[in-house]
Length: 133
Length: 141
Image 1: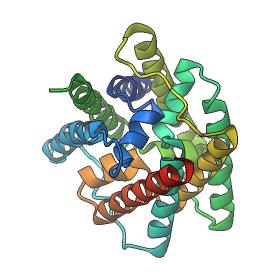
Image 2: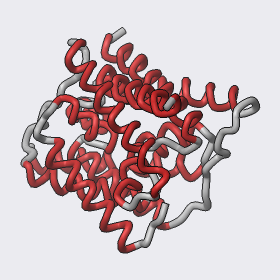
Image 3: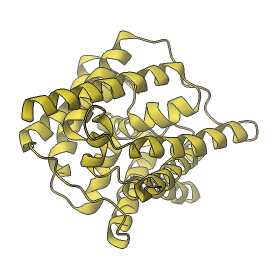
């Protein structure tokens, strides 16, 4: 019960942060990627803030709490190919998974197209590559 | 300083704080593509926290949309049809699961924990995004 409430609060922080930072607006995201056009660096400030809090907290608490170790794996062709495909879709739609799902909170119909398509892509890859967990 | 940058930084702190809290409580790395994708092929004992986290995410964003003028509501970029959005969703779903993470899983959590593959993945998807936006601009302008 307590863990459930804390997990909900964690998600709510995350969603509120996405909305406050402007990252739920695909125009802000594509503007960050538009380096050769009208560049808007906001996303760099978002990542900077997120990394500052997360990294500081992780390395401070790692000694006292049982936290997962560095999840790094050997670099694989799947990692690179997946990142390329993700980047293409990200640039096309201005949406990555978090903001797409968060936009359900705005009850905007666009999420109802993007998120099911994203789920289909995930199911496909999980079938083809037999990714389990 | 542009107030967008300040709200971006503050929002980023909330994202980082939420990710850290979820990591502590669940012991799992809370990248959104993984949290969502693994629901599509769920393990019995891991369904609950994933649903609760995503429900919280939608609620938190919804609250901000309702209460704050700063919260950016979705605007559809010019020249993009529903078909483009569906294709983008498909490729994002495929790519994030194949590559093992998205902006939060690799970009915040993985990089924040010092994972080298996450640093590479983040550099690659940002570069691919920049190329895509640039090409899209040329084609539609």
